[in-house]
Amino acid sequence: MLWKNYRDLRLFEDPAFGQWGLHIFNPHEAAAATRMWSHDIRGDYRRGDIVVGEFLGDGERLLVRSDPGLGDFGSVVVSLPLYSRSEWPVVASALLEFLDRFISMQGAKYWERPA
Image (cartoon, helix red, strand yellow):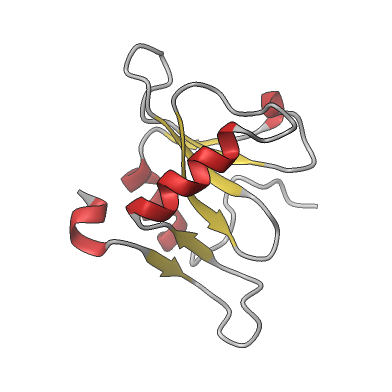
């Protein structure tokens, strides 16, 4: 439904340097990013991962779990490039829930612990 209405989104993007914000890919970009992710050398890809976006400036990806046969179907996960997959946060049970929370927090990464 999201792609039917918007194709892609750029939320809270830093217009000066592009080092902050979230880019939700269009369907073609998501398919390409998912293909690349599935061949990632680290081996973090799991069946059912769809890369739907990226956080600008820091290399984190936004994943949606899409295998209806698994218990985490629909969950939204943030990949953290410096951490193992077991440490990646599940940030919402669905993409629209994630977007609602992310927007209500004005683009703050609400899943990060304060330093």
